[in-house]
Image: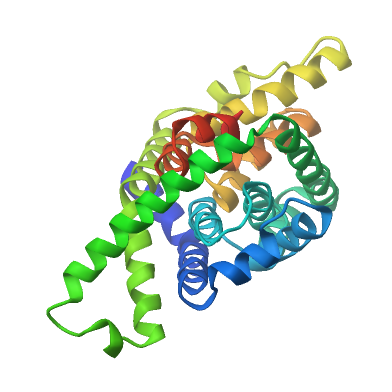
Length: 290
């Protein structure tokens, strides 16, 4: 039963994974470092707004959004637009809004949309204040080292079949797509597998018990909003996959703010934190998670 739930969640989000990894591969092949640096090399309002708009149009799962963001970063984008892109691609997409509307109503869609814009602004402000230039440079060196390793691996696999001059761009896109999958398949598999077991083994009452459902309204509001992302981290479910649990929490008396904050926690599930460390290094991953 647990394996069934894991496979069902993977199937529901598979199209978003494919789209996100495809975007990542296209960025790696068709967009030069100079183009990416000119478009997103700074962390100004224009760059953050454009990255958010592109993220909203990309409709990615959390794992695929992280892969696409990392590709942009390795091409020369600043880390702040990258994080804005990741947040928008998992919280401002039409498909997510449609699922939320069907399961919980239009008020949650409105709150999700307005809140996502506000949180992107907060991310921009907090990163501008607390992201040292040397830490971003360290993250870029770490990402470049990963790129060098991937290129070496990819070339090693194909050098006996065709030369680099014979490879078309779409062949390189396919190779980049496969390399992204190879880099993340363990984290993705572990995330869905654990989420499947949690969905089967852990009763909904366990999650509900972690939220205050009585007492002063202000205390309940603060506690629910604080616990929401922690439940998301513990549930291991990404992006659209966490909406059914959010709906269950709402139907069992969890506050509006607590449910919304739970939905926003899809980018800090434990497997993704390990992905950030793999992509950007442990120090940058810790800052992004915080």
